[in-house]
Length: 296
Image (tube, rainbow, N blue to C red; front, side, top):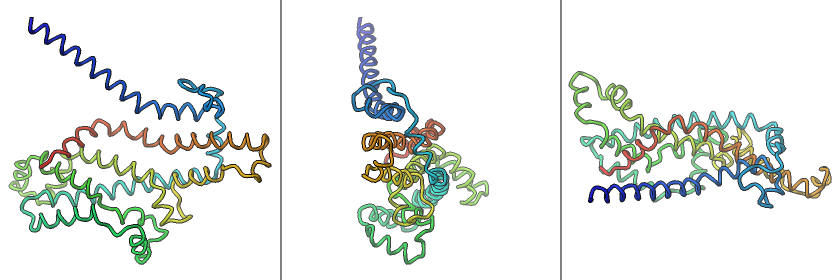
């Protein structure tokens, strides 16, 4: 009788958990789905509430307007370049910073850890950082996007905890006893065993560099604009004005309609590459993040 009651209780708990997960999934996923169907719909139908589940007044005018801009493809390739280089640079910096701090025999380990933590709470701010970048001659150089924030201290702590808790110390010692140098041990043993946390940090860095337009606007100016900055310019240019309205058939109404279509289409164009890339590292994401979050 007790076993039967326990079985019913377990099934009830499972049903409740599945229902909660379904509700959370709906809350998280529906806004993205809504933006997708809105980008293919007539804006007037969107505001009238006719696009709750399916597109209404199917049109590709928003995407045509976005891709008609000659800066869109150079901006896309610039974003790919900055994202790839920035991700590799950030992951390398995290690893060469976190691994030494994970070694208990490192001289001054506590002081160095406190030094990094201090920078999480106290920073010079945007103006001093800009002056440093300017004085080092990096204005207009893509490295100005990477060097000022080369080490994310919060992420570095996660990686350090992963090294301390998830890399078997006996395996590292065995490699050193067999004659491997610390560098060879790091390359041949530590890195292969830390692929989950590497994937997590790569995703964090990819998303950050792909979506970053403010840093590029400050340091790059009009040179080598990434995709988000190009899309921002397209949205600004699409804002209604008297002069533009006179050049568009239908006046302000048609121009405002085009502006709304461009807005939704720009969101999809900006987000789609990251949505495509994420599934390739998704299997490592949860394992790496949770393991790295364990307090050592």
